Length: 169
Ligand code: CUA
Image (cartoon, rainbow, N blue to C red; front, top):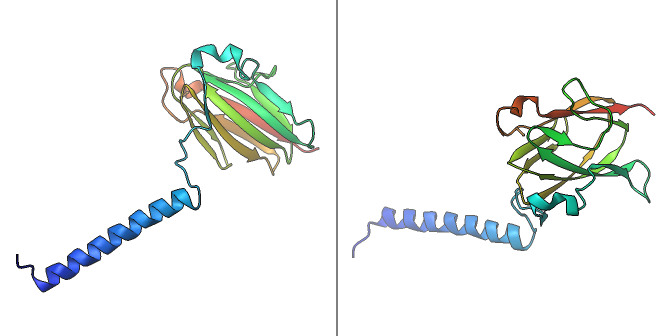
């Protein structure tokens, strides 16, 4: 079969580029351990949350480190259950933390897929029922930051938010 010289060059270039992409993919996964951000850290039965660490949602101070917290949060139609006694006018949780607080967040859903975004912080998680999402946030500046569901989850989606109030010590 005759292949024109320039056509042959292009075939070689394309094969080399595809090969480089594939090698980068394999190197990223094997050497650098890069995973898709949606890869869950663990699985859970969304109908049996009462028998898990999500039975009592809340923000728990670390026993060993100062100003470090573990947060267990359940997203449900249409609120975030963070275990706070303080509520806004819609009944959504208000969380108060001192400035500099580092919060290790574990979040799951009791029903449908929700979003989890804390404004002005690098937190953006998709909450899938049956999966536990994990992320960490550090509140370096005092202020009021909303936690928003940014994935459409039904007729109450637009009222699904909570508030973090970060206070000076
Ligand atoms: Cu939950 Cu939108």
